Length: 244
Image (cartoon, rainbow, N blue to C red; front, side):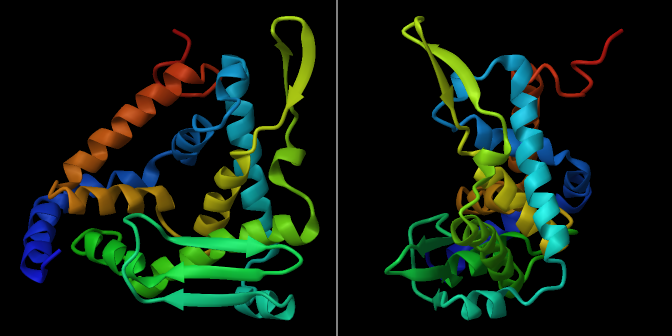
């Protein structure tokens, strides 16, 4: 996108943003975790009353790991295990932040700096400015959590109870909820980096900026997500679910 167009989009994005964005710091992390859970292959097999359990299980795993590694040198830990961290400055597909490869042949984390720069630009003028370096640190922390899973051979879905269902209504089966890993990785990154807002808000802001939308677009998307979360997860505590 030409620089002039990016500057115009940024002006549109930041217009009147300060008052609106101040609300996002208080939004429950579970709402953003729900957006990951609903992408799980077995989501529709999770009883509605149990969906909050998997959200809470993922959040708990990420939070406990962040507390354990608080203040640690993540890059140093990765180096000691033979993991190479590569920083790519070139253009990548929109929204691609980072990725990890970890097996007997390859131990590597890729961080895409262009996405970090775009997120930083999208958050300019808000009460939650993020530098490209801070965005990159969030990306690295996210992948570090997955490194912990791979290197220790202990995955987040193993910390949560499996979903029990019947195949063709006859055979009992147990299914792992693998998206709990993403829920945990986002929370690990948020807590380890001491971010005031959930990292997914940065993604929403980036999309809004690229669409030449103001921050109201982000808040509307979050409001829709919140309403869906309370409707789909009846065990969640929220205004729509409180007993009269």
